[in-house]
Length: 238
Image (cartoon, rainbow, N blue to C red):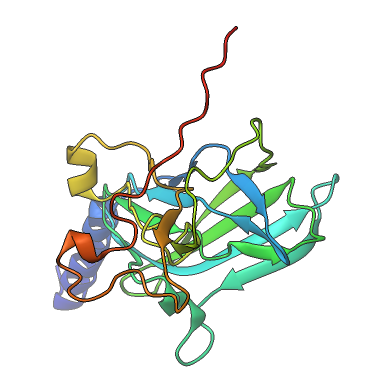
């Protein structure tokens, strides 16, 4: 056998071995938390407060490149579209801090496309996430149909506090109530499967200048809310 034939055979064997050892294409798995997101009607916008979790069953790590959200009509055609992607410097995808999807692991994402016009029809949404491998040679997509429902009160409620109050922290995109990554290993190990604070509000008592305490904040007696009564609803007989 000539040297050229041996060299060609070695190359073919190397290519075949690389192809055999490469991870097979396995569809990405994607879901929302909660399963049915709620649409909150704000003064000027509709807000979608939910998380996206992507699971990678393959043996190849991926990086998130793009998130696209489309509002669809009854025929399934897009009528409105939003995205964050790698276009720009810095790009909008960089507002998603963790974009690494490990092999045989999960990536949790706080939905960055959460605000829509008040007149938009959000009954049918399609989210498409695009990933690439580390070399940037191939891309993988995961598509998710989302059918949120408009939140409506079932019970008439009152604020159980009397006095000058301020919502110190709510549950908008940047609030700490919103920031619980349920896909994080330490959260999963603790057995946490839902975010009980997703729609929480923090009320604080303030004075006429907006101050919640006077003096040393480490002394509980200095807080205006300390010792304030909380009103309980009356018992309802059936």
